[in-house]
Image (tube, rainbow over all chains, first blue to last red; front, side, top):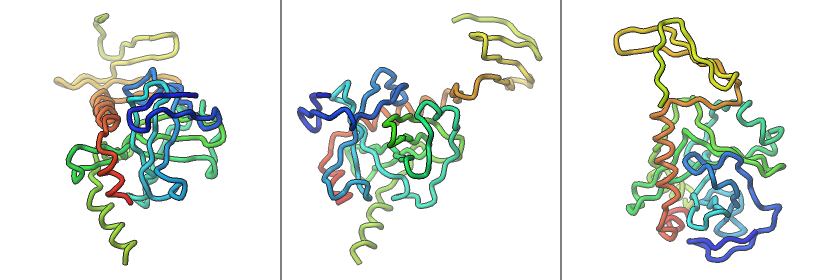
Amino acid sequence: MRANTRIFGEIDIPEEKIITMEKGMIGFPDLTHYTLIYNSEKERGQSTIMWLQSMDDGDIAFPVMVPTIVMPDYDPVVNEEILAPLGELTDENTYILITVNVPSDIKKIACNLKAPIVINTDTNRAAQLIVEDDYKVHFPIYDIIKGNKERAGE
Amino acid sequence: MLALTRKKGESLIINNNVEITVLEIRGDQIKIGVNAPKEIPIYRKEVYEQILQENKKSAEALDAQALNELFD
């Protein structure tokens, strides 16, 4: 599947790397095909930024990250019925990401813990949902990321 | 928008499988009960709007370089 993207230029992604979000992201109901783009192979699945790139509209790409980087005990209660269309979820095939909001002042970077994206890595089906838990929609993370880096550098 | 008047205890049925009931009226607060199949997401609109705005802002991320520098 091909897309002409704002950030990555022309990309051609094999079918097995296409993530289908039947209901799209919240606010983007018509964009149902995505792919995850990593900054480099070595960072795959590691503590870094990835991009959930829309294959339907190349202008749309969500920076995403694994929530445990900024909140190690992140464990929202999710409505299993809403996730049923993704196929059976297990500890092994469930991959949870959160969107990152990157304003022009990078110090104001924040992530959204209230609306995680749940991906079934076996079926490559995903959904974004709003959890009932008292998590923040706009959770500033600049100091946390800086702190993590400093600890890693010690 | 369809506007219907309901009293306490009265309901609406939407699409044969969603029932909305006025449970309690107290001043300017109304308690609403929703009976719907569990696979139908039901959200408070202000929370939904907040998520929608946050998603839109996220999708507009311009400075990929500053982002990479912060994380690398």
